[in-house]
Image (cartoon, rainbow, N blue to C red; front, side, top):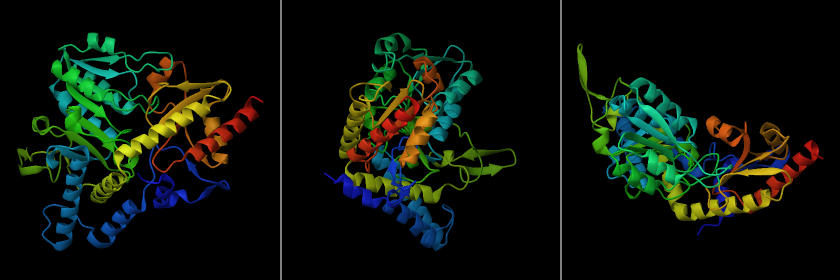
Amino acid sequence: MPSWKDVRADFPILHQQVNGRPLVYLDNGATTQKPRAVIDALVRYYERDNSNVHRGLHTLSMRATDAYEGARARVAKFVNAADPAEIIFTRGTTESINLVARSYGGKLGRGDVILCTEMEHHSNLVPWQQAAKASGATLKFVPFIGANAEGGLDLEALDRLLTPQVKVFAFTHISNTLGTINPVAELCRRARAVGAVTVIDAAQSAGHAPLDVRLLGCDFLAFSGHKMCGPTGIGVLYGRFALLDQLSPDETGGGMVVSVDFEGAKWKPAPERFEAGTPNVAGAIGLGAACDYLDSLDRVAIRQHDDELARVAYEKLATLPGIRLIGPTGERGGLVSFAFEGVHAHDVVTFADEDGVALRGGHHCNQPLMRKLGLTSTTRASFYLYNTAEEIDLLVASLRRTLKFFIG
């Protein structure tokens, strides 16, 4: 079991002051900080191995290729994929879901249904809106229960909605606004029973808990490196190889073709088929280093730490006057969203920054969800492995100062 206070020493950025106060970084739902091990992996690549991958016969290219494909194998192990060929490197969760929506969406037609939930991030909503428009398919949504979505997904409604007409069921693992942890293995099982393909947005779960795609039984799963201690600009799409092998690429160019003539081209198999052009080699290597780092700490322990911080934060925030806490009252992911009547979330975030506390305020790319909640925005505190209970006390103290200024 790691000492979480000792873990903080691995993150250089945390050892600074903001506005004369020690930095309290509680914006991990947007992006996480990077440990020295990941930073060193990036520096080592650029100082020693920087070269384009594949097809190069010189030493640097071969070293870069080995490191890049080694990172693919490492990510496959991280999510327990059956084969590294089931791992496609992308720019992030957004690009991963767009890839599926465009490529698999080409198989859809009138009479087909795409099913999402009411708690989806725009990145797992807008691509499916576009796929529905392009194909003539119908887009439907699984509702949530409770004015603050404290009841999670309405699974009785799911029974009515999940019919054989549903060809795609796309849903988040952990809501980036509510903190709701959806029963993804059960959702995949139900979808599989009617022949629907499942697409999981794992942006908020990949670096926070064990993730086993074979145990979940999903068809596709997407996540971003920068939300799990890795670099920005690198992400992953896991896809069952049998499905990937049926899909056409959504981008074309160099590196993803077997042969080309003036009349046409023949694609390589996955994953190369979906990685046109020069890939983010350094990003992939950094992501592999992040996987090593997180597993060295034990992802079960990380989840327990996140859960405990969210529980403590929820209880302490509930003591503040006039607060509205959003999402489940029980088990939740490592974040808490809240709102104060008469105080805009942007003002809350601005005042917190004066105290060195980094929060996020806004609609969190969840505008339809916000409207259903009767809100325009919330403030979100999101936690990770380097955060402490003492930082929650600093958050609450900052919020009390904010409320005193605006409400008295």
